[in-house]
Structures are given as structure tokens and as C-alpha cells.
Length: 305
Image 1 (tube, rainbow, N blue to C red):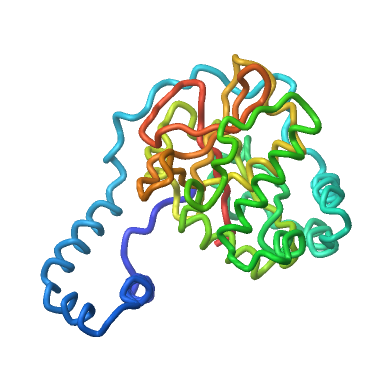
Image 2: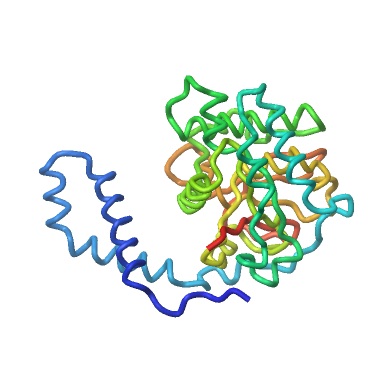
């Protein structure tokens, strides 16, 4: 059984410091006068940092946002299909622009799930294929902005699913950078995976919601293990494209996608998260990160440590 670390190493402190510095550099690309004003208010900044650290270290802020899960997976869903078939299916919808060879090579020697997935999640965690940024670069070569490429990728997968079954995008015209973005923690994990796997199709050790059934998205996020990350819209739609039987009827556990953040008004308030569910057919939609429903569970993936 995987446990949380009981102490903080100097390397982890250095990593947190580097992240803070990078964030400051990004946010203060303004005048020297503005940066001096920031330094003059350093005490306020320190208070904010300390409050954030205390908040991020807690695992009980949203303990009341949890109910009993009402359902499990639909009986038609038998777990992940052969990973090679998943890879080839995703490559086939990319009009020969995405080379699946790296993913197929990695699939021949997959890491043992027991080495990095917690024991209580092994029974419902398996390997799933997803498109990632290298594929999106090949598919949308004219788009240089990564965030916009991601949204184009999600739109593409939504369209591809709709060609295979009844499917409604309840956020039509809202899958754009004003409304949808990747959670930074998920982005970091996916980029790390991309360094080891290469290619535009990556393989993830995922569970599709049952581990966090009945929990709000933010409750699930605060309970993620150190090597557990929220599945995002591009991953979720890639998985459902290959596994249509995962979404079959009203009486099933549907999938929250905590690896993305959504702003309903297209402003800075990203307080919703996407979801995939069944409602008069399969659908892509969103809900508040605070909403706990026994019909939903957050999908997540584990990364070898």
C-alpha cells in the first residue's frame, strides 16, 4: 500500500522555491517600478504564500463534499481494450499524421502496475491510450499556441465520438482558451510522461471514476496521492472514443475530469470541471468543482515513481 511521505526533503523545498520564482517571473513581466512595488509589499506576499502552503497541505478542506456512490460502471464495460488496438484506433483518426510506433514500442514492455498503483486501486486501474501535444502539433501545424492546440484537440475528439454514437457537446463553442484549460498539476505530469514515452500517443495507467465515486472534484483532488493526477478532457475523450461502452445509460457512474478547469463565463473564475456522462446519449458537459453527486466519480491516472 502506497503511503504519503512523512518528511520534506531539501530537494522538494528547492523545487517549490523554483516554482515560486518561475511564477513570479511570469507574473512580473512588467516595469521595474511595478516589481519594486511588489518587493515593498513582500510581507503581504509572505502571508499569502504561508496561507497557500497551509491550504495545499490539508486533506480535509472539502471533507463534507462527499456522498455514497450510487452506481458502478455499466455492465457492458469490461475494462480497457488491448492497448495496441487503442493506439491504432487513435492513430487511424489522425489521417496518417501521427506515427503510433513509439506508443506501440512502449506497449510491448509496460511497467508493472503493482510497482506504482496503490493496492486498493489495482482492481480497476488499467492502461489507456490518449492523444497528447506532439499529435496536436502534427494535426494543427498552423497553431503555435499550446493552450489553443489543446482546445482544438478536445474539439476534434468530441467530433470524432459524435460520428460513432449519439453524443451531445453541451459546451458547444465553449471549448476554447477563455473557458477551458489544463490543471497545472496534470500538465506537469503529462509533460513528464512525454519525456519518457515520446510520440503523439501516450499510455496512462487510469481508473475511470470508481476510486473517487461520490466525491466532488475538489474533494477528489485533495485526496490524490503524490503520483495520482486528474484525467483531463483530451484524455477522457480519447478513452471514451475507444470505450463507448463506458457511457451507456442513466444508471451508471459517470466521469468527472478533474485534470481540466472550466470557466462558465469565460472569465478568470475557473470553478468548474468537465465531465463525460450519459443523458439522452453520451455528452460532454461541466459541473461545479464543489458539487458532490453519487452518480459521478473523478477519473485519475497514476505515474511511475
